[in-house]
Length: 196
Image: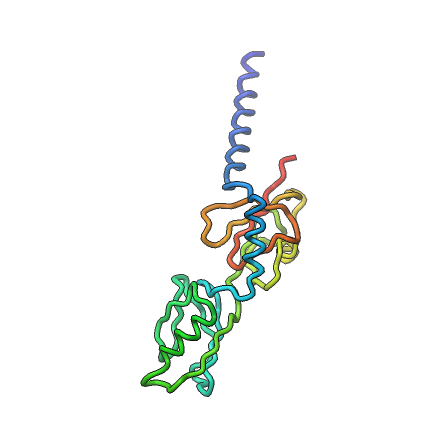
């Protein structure tokens, strides 16, 4: 009887260690301050340009320069006559001034440039959802609508928490599943499995 108990005890110990290693995959629980900062960040009317965004540049009277341009992973965008320009981290107004100065001089006299965000970088959702993958970001996206875009959760999904890693963060933080938790461009969302 003692011999049979040892393999069973070892099996339980291995299962507990496996469960603990899965639980340690997240960095921590988002505090109320983290949640409020996230809501304020999402409420900013004009976010800065980031790698992966697509910008629409309009140069008045110059149809050959007007168009949509992708910001590369390093944060640069290449435009005719302007060359390669650092875009990541700039506001729309800063990018307009930068491009106007690049176009002016020997190319154009007093160019009128406008920059708009044509599309944001996508967000990613994985874990216990019916259709994990990459999805286009739309303004006003929150956790509940992101889950709906991914086809809803599976029957094994946690019904109370979700893990989110924002661009620039090194790990996931646990947030409550709530319609007031916004999703930002480039977010990596993981729906964990419940353990009961």
